[in-house]
Length: 127
Image (tube, rainbow, N blue to C red; front, side):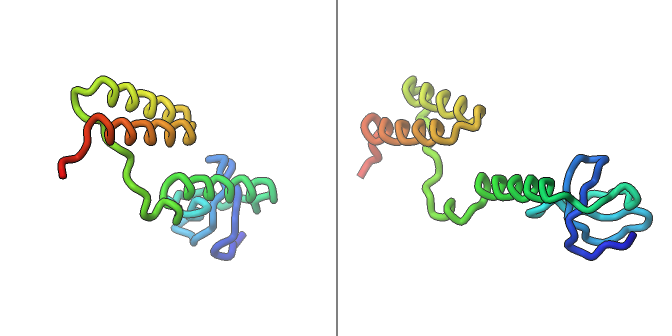
């Protein structure tokens, strides 16, 4: 079956929805929704994605964009770096890393704020 470029197809071998790009030899080339590395799929196994599968793929792509390079990230300061040999900086860095590992972005932001505040008070920049 020939598909139009851009058609969203479900690949049961990878349990993923991909955007049909083209064919390459005996394979169909699919790309993740929202961009990413293409993969080869068996064209006979592909089927049109259901509404639920399409929604899941679009939400996954939107979440990935929001975590990586969303427009709201432009111009924000980089996370503060702990000052070497400062126990409080190291403690706040540990809290931040734990929050990041748990995907608790609110707690990660809180740790960044506390670390910045601590650095402004305990490690002021020279004028």
